[in-house]
Amino acid sequence: MMLPARVRVLDSHTGGEPTRMVIGMEETLIGQTMAERRLYLRENFQALGAPIVNEPRGNDIIVGAWMCTPVDPSCFAGVVFFNNVGVLQMCGHATIGVIATLAWQGVLPPGIHRLETPVGIIEIELHSDGKTVSFENVASERYRSAVRVEVPVSPSLENSFVIGDIAYGGNWFYLVDDHGLELEVSNVSQLMATTLSIKAALIEQGITGENGDEIDHVELVGPSKKADAKNFVLCPGNAYDRSPCGTGTSAKVACLAAAGKLKAGETFRQESITGSCFEATYRINDSGAVIPKLTGSAEVIAETTLLFERE
Ligand code: PYC
Image 1 (cartoon, helix red, strand yellow):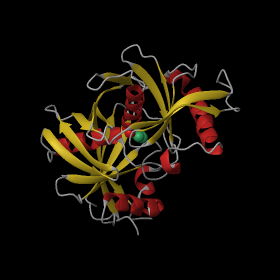
Image 2 (spheres, rainbow, N blue to C red; image 1 turned 135 degrees about the vertical axis):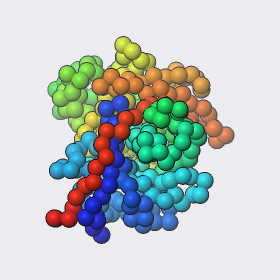
Image 3 (cartoon, rainbow, N blue to C red; image 1 turned 135 degrees about the horizontal axis):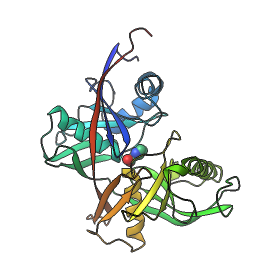
Image 4 (cartoon, protein in one colour; image 1 turned 90 degrees about the vertical axis):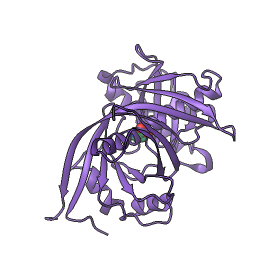
């Protein structure tokens, strides 16, 4: 399996976090379901995904969005998200990026639409400015609360351990409120070092999400001057999210709901480490699950043809 000589992409950013939408290759990912297509991209990642998002044509913070023909006819498109090291289950900022990009292309009008992802169908509202997007994420849950993780090798933490929640918001997160660190861009190297130590400790201590799923995102949460909270999110591939992280905000909403700190329908504003914001609410579905709804906006920033013909 090889990429064609020319691959067209549209780049956007959502609150500072880039999304690269792959177009014109809707039939490349083979599979009867979106989950199978995600596995196909995972198996062929070095040949298909990595050259699109990584250096020299990209960098390690870009999230790719591989557009597919939907399996479910009620959806206008399917998408598989991937990053510098592999495939993601879901991605909130890239969902917003893809919808704003399709609006910019003139192929998606304002209104309600359905997008198929490997973890389920997402209902989306494109607002009239063509840039602001609300979407209902997949069911999110706090899986375990107050989980202690020994972190002996982090020089920046006050203690040699942290206590946090394990939650699912489309990806698995370990969320820590009580870390004693300043959540400022000027402090990014310390935040990176600390979250990398926490991630290594989670793996070493065998702490996982449900069914042994790897916790591949670490989220530090703290006070914000302009929103309800501010976060720093370490993503798989060891880049940090410049946006408030859609799946991370969903995981936080699930934790707040479980702790009785956020009621259904109440608004929670999440600021990112770079100062951008998402707004979130949630509802409880018929099975009693938390369904977060997020709103953010994205800008289209490049229309590019990647060339592979000389390699
Ligand atoms: O917005 O969900 C998100 C996300 C995951 C990884 C990077 N962004």
